[in-house]
Image (cartoon, rainbow, N blue to C red; front, side, top):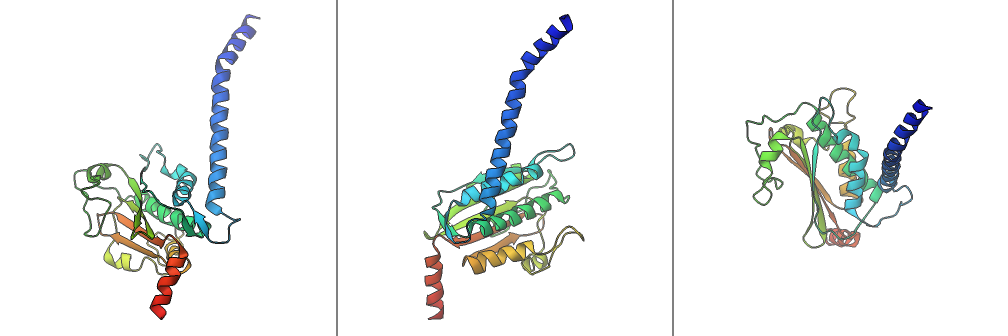
Length: 243
């Protein structure tokens, strides 16, 4: 009877904690399901106004396991510098795939042993905008594997999404071939060489935008997506070019 009383006492003490853990787990499952739904947008084949930040956040949640720290890995710091974006007309599922490809590419770069020597300052490229006087992150980025995601309105009718990492960067030869179909710098079996090519096609052909990369050895990499807020803007620009 005394043992049963002790067991009951432990059970009473543990019950709130167990219930709390179950709630955290169920909330986590709910968030993942919602993120998968937002990411895939399988029921939205038409272009419509969407929240770009929602798509990025859903992608980050899906990739959470790769971002978190492990016994032999410090984890990756994600810095989100979101601007005040309007809803953007786009194929949400396709654009989310671009976010997935670019963020995964940054994760791969940081995980492939491209560690920055903490004693050396992080170099920057002439056109790089993610390490400037307005956002002095160079020192922190030298020590911690970091992905920085920035969004902003440009030219009033366009938005820019910048995804930068502080990996080892790449040579001009590699950068110039990034968007070529089947081109990859990853080991055999690790990459198909299609992710960036497909992303380029989605941004350029499907959304009338631009996708470019800024990088240099030991300077990290930054991918910049620029798309019109409304596709009518892209169509008008196209008509002006052909007329």
